[in-house]
Image 1 (tube, rainbow, N blue to C red):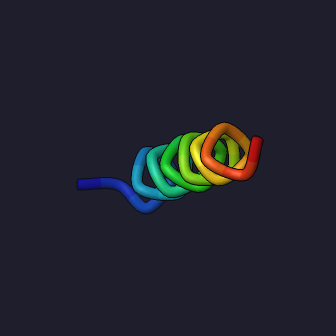
Image 2 (cartoon, one colour):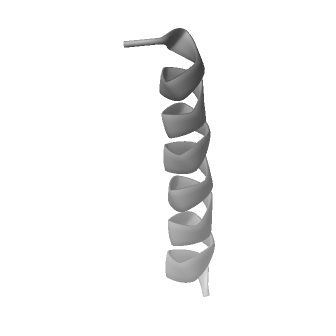
Image 3 (tube, rainbow, N blue to C red):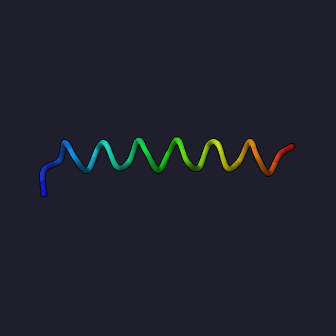
Length: 26
């Protein structure tokens, strides 16, 4: 597994978590 794809996945998860937090906040 390349670190590049891993970093991309991490970014995706972070974005998902951020959007989820915003959704629950409202």
